[in-house]
Image (tube, rainbow, N blue to C red; front, side, top):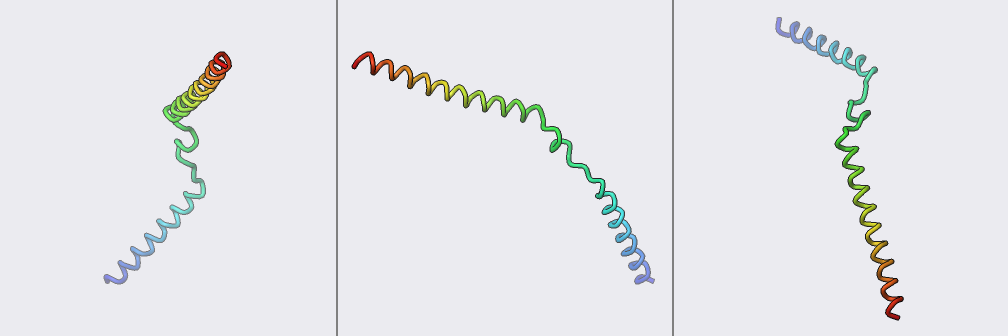
Amino acid sequence: MFSNSKHNLDNQTNDIKKESLEEDDTFLPPRNAVHPTEKEKWLRIFYRSLLWLFIMLVAGLLVWGWRKVKGEA
């Protein structure tokens, strides 16, 4: 009696696994993989703007230093 019910249970779990595999054929990626959040977009813009400000600061200091050295020489 118990072995028959266990066999039926095993068949049911196998059927469920097969159904889930069939459903996975039409798998769609998660929404955040397709459409990044606005937070990530603004964070990237923020970091790039900081990078460009740093580059402009270094360039400005180099130009200022060259002018200062030329004026003294």
